[in-house]
Image 1: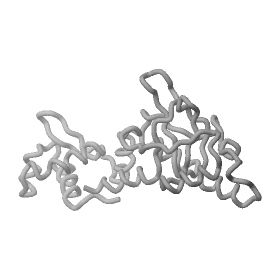
Image 2 (image 1 turned 90 degrees about the horizontal axis):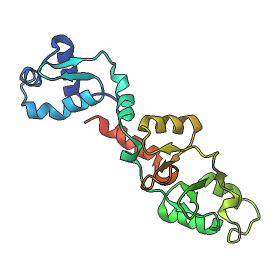
Image 3 (image 1 turned 180 degrees about the vertical axis):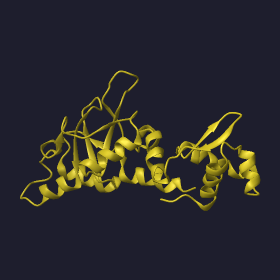
Length: 207
């Protein structure tokens, strides 16, 4: 990921002249202050620049390579998570496969009647069971799922960076997101976060 040409110019100006006001940066670039507002906000959020009231912007010394990590660190899982697709343990493998394809997801979550996470089933799990001589209409999904507490999860209050690290470390495509329902239950299934959610954040960085 690279900064845009204008963002690089702003960083260089701050390096050479900081602290410097937004108006002075805009004047140097022959642009209106309002035009630079999104770039300055992004660079500040990413930690490349820091802003001090009545003083101005200055370069923090952080390399551009840190930008993605800084953005992911500031984003919370509950800001980017998607809706989970869940079934119960008694659901047949056949019905679960149908749900998987109808919902166009790669992972199904298994919950109880209180929406507490009990397990996870991936496409690989389905592939393995279909290769055998099994009656998929009679086989419950609870037989093939990975059960809690062996499921890798994140909390809705965790950072997107933590989610990305878990996805990378455990080589999985999707994580169940646990949270609270009206502060009553700590580990209710409230969402899912996938590689797609994380890629979307990264794709939006180069504004």
